[in-house]
Amino acid sequence: MKEKGRNMLINAKATKVELMSMAVAARLEAVRSAVAVPAACGPDIAPAPARGGFVLVRNLELLPVGDRVEAVHRGYGGRAAIRQADAFDAMLAAAARRKQPSPLTHGQISIGRRYRDLVELLASDGTKLSSLEASCGGPDARDWMDRRLAFSRELEAMRRRLGVGPVMVLRRIRPSQRHRDLAPGERAPEIFTRRDLVDAVCLKGLSIKQALKTFRWSDSGRNCRAAMEALSASLDAMIGYRG
Image 1: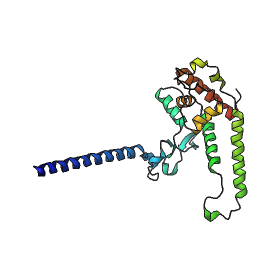
Image 2: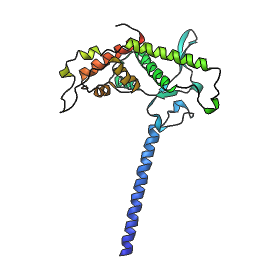
Image 3: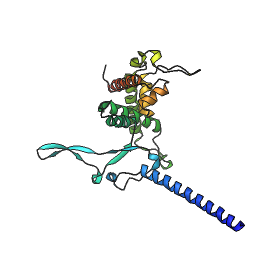
């Protein structure tokens, strides 16, 4: 009787271990599937779970083909590249699912990405040296400083055109419509600036709804439309357009 009970216990433990192994294998397979690189990119790009979401990029060039000009894919070996997906890609995908036009123009999206790249580059480009072997310096120190100053001037020009004032289109919304119901002790929605909105979308990668919640605003349809209008106008201002 004791031997039978011992065998049952061993079988139960073995079954549990087998189920756990199957669950781990299923999770690993899900991770592999999520980070799988499309065949159009070729075998040189390794799958990386920490990479996050990405989109395919095709390097196109306008070349003469016969008596006309066509966009020709010029990627190495005919392959596509990848880049990290951002908040703008999410906006474009959401608009495509709803069969609606893009909420932002190509120029607005480009200046938003340029702003993000400049901020990240200047935040990480604090020193010219990349290794101890190069500690003796080099003749390109002046070129590095000139490049950094040029990037700093470009970023400051964007921020100067953006300004520090509040988002007027959102400021005109009545306080009673900025939130639904405040819980006891909860702070009222705050008036945020155009730079706050641009930083939330371009640098933090937040959607319009997430940005509104960050500033304790209701993510109602009216507020989302007003915030998108404010983001569009802010990106135009960074380009240099005067509304």
